[in-house]
Image 1 (cartoon, rainbow, N blue to C red):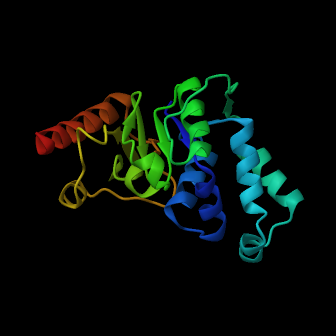
Image 2: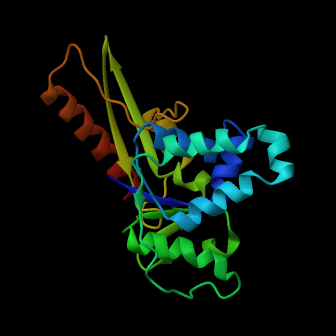
Length: 209
């Protein structure tokens, strides 16, 4: 399963802007599409930001409600020990905790809108990317045959296989809110679904090459 660290602003944006890309990221988390990697210091920062008076006026949640909100989100999160010492972001040392968390938790992504972190690009093999861009690399391909639905999630490396709008149109990719991956079949065999998935992936590879 993909592991990701989310910075505090992703949680704030998700609460004050329902339907935004950060909100979709949290929906994916609730649907167990990836594992959240987090640390105690990150959780403390998130809760502190959400209690800012200006933000409270927008999301309208009290401290107890925010605590409950987080209890659900971090129930299955991987907590890192915060033992590693890093100084990779000299212009904003407070951002180092996200890198420490990602390294200790073996995260694939840091999802952030912070320009100091984004400027690092790929750091120690970890992709630092915005919530908007990460949805470009998660392609939902759905094919309906009668009552059957076959789907495949194609995750591409953001710097090797960029996806374009024309590819979206070519294979009829559909983003449905936060549900990036769903596969079920009532009338077709597993073999049929594998053949469908293989054909779609071959189409994808033929396009990008």
